[in-house]
Length: 458
Image (cartoon, rainbow, N blue to C red; front, side, top):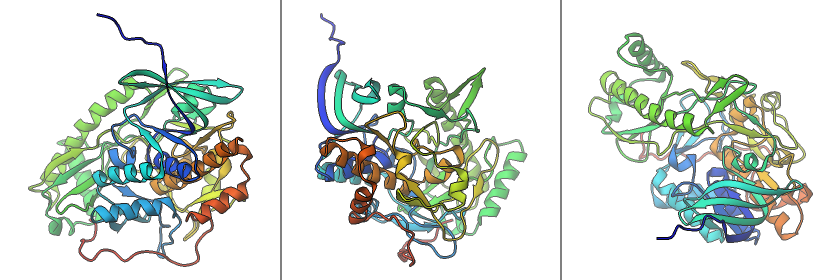
């Protein structure tokens, strides 16, 4: 019996290689392929979508919060929502905390929508593939090493997009990043879960403040271990099914001068196990103490724990808290964000800081250009921002908007045999506008009427 060779073998060469298929990565792959570039999309899970399919069921960030919502994201993200509507109901509902209208979908449908859009665009997805290393010469990534069922394989590309969420490509390439927890407390982790058999009529009679009072009362009784006291639940497209964002787990610890966060496999393993145990406590609390849940049952945990922040890349520009709250605009902006700073720190509550009513901050192209790299862009929650700024711009719609910008730029650069930094910003912006992206604050309200057949959210 012979042992298989461990020597990496050639697998693929593409104009654009996208690492990570979350909301940012899948959108980047679609956008890059539509420029005419060949695209390979590398994903560790058995399906596309990342947090959008493995953890959550709602897109936030499409609209500004406040009394007069404005739609600030368009283009490929609109196609994603349209694809979801073709497969079943999609609910537009107010966020519990006033973060703006959320677009709630069935995650199983979204898996199919991502697959259709990616493959129809001509991009090639590779699932069950883990990035292991990168070959770098003079700041240029030549190829990456990927672990697959068939062994280690090499993937070469002209331009790379790091949409891994954890900046895995930049980490393996040795490019600069800030580790969440080094300067500011890293945002916590959350295991989401869904329940079926909920009496929506009774549940709807309990407002947010009363739910939080019941949580605090249950925790104070000593009978329940509920570290977060202001978690939320919301309706889904499935009758009688409710989804939650309630659990809270520490995402990092300090070991001397070293910060260990959710990029550490041991910490992540412990968090996954603890998250499910904690979720069961919240299920028990809901069934025991919250009207409408008396006969509810657990339907599912999230496929993986929800991670909000690990590594944040150093780009040509770092978006800051003051720029976000000051609704700063930039000449090179390629997307917009009106979402508040939503900081899930340790403890029982969450810190919310809002932009001025109806205002938005621009997302500069420079925040997607990796400072230490010649041919690498970044998109999604690991983009170049401070802790506070990232806590606003990590919203799912903004991740998609960043992905469209990064993918478009990557495709244009690859086809012109140049680097992303050399793509004329005006040309990129013109292409994005042509493809439906929103780069300037709208002057009119664009909000679809809610589906009358769907009850309002709890």
